Picture 1 (cartoon, rainbow, N blue to C red):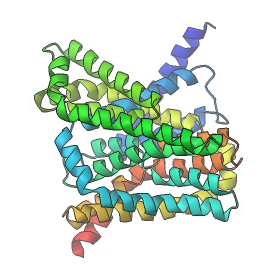
Picture 2 (cartoon, rainbow, N blue to C red):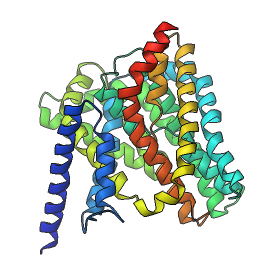
Picture 3 (cartoon, rainbow, N blue to C red):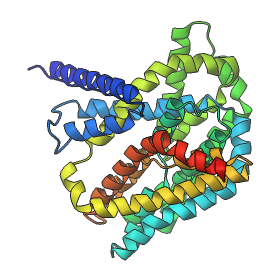
Length: 386
């Protein structure tokens, strides 16, 4: 059969299957994300019916999904709000780093994997999935809640921390010199600073350039600009998600509202592809031997993230119900965590690190949205009584 025909058949079957799973999730009243992840496991490496040819295509689509998720999230806020939120939540960001990097580092050291593996596992347990959290906030209608800016500031703080962490980790894995590592970190920090300054001081010029009365032209400009900045950020060892988010905050007012309406269908399509592709990359056979340890690490991480969210929301003067929602929203892990584990496995740090990270992320990627839907009302009720 012709290669293109096979790709169309597989991709069409994936999208149709996701549509059916989405309809099922709506009927049951849960987030569709866990079902998308399970579908990926079923059709990925070691699954029931592995896909033959469309992995690369789905991979590109999944990256685009993360970019669109963070772009639309950035459109909700402007640059001034972001800077004020980051400044006001810097202490909470440091608490987030200490509380959530510690479980991974301690686990690696107790297992005898060595200090480099400990640094890698610290990153695996630290970073919340911006993509999944953005989807949860959107699905459950939490975007307008008072605690949401606090959650977003923590996500941005984490992504900016990753801009420093990833070059450091790469230096350790490659055995590079201190000078080479310092140069990599400096480039990453300079990139983030330049993009932030441009968003703050020249946002009106960006809006004037992007603005158009024609919806097709507006969509092409916004998506094109987001992809260009995301690609530049990725090339300079900064998260593509950070780049897309900053493009979103550079746009505001009526223009941002128009862009959101146009982007919503694209965002939902490619976000679903992202979640299923995450499952495709995971071999179920490798997960089972480390499932118990991964579950224990996941429970510890859920507790530390909930404490982080509650602490940050309480400092922002948010009521207990909002504190609970903030903590739950930070539970999911996803794209960053897998990238970090992939770097460590590729460098030969330890053969079990990849499987442990995959099992850990899968648990929290699936449970995070479920917790937001099912556990949150219980926690909110208890918080209100207290």
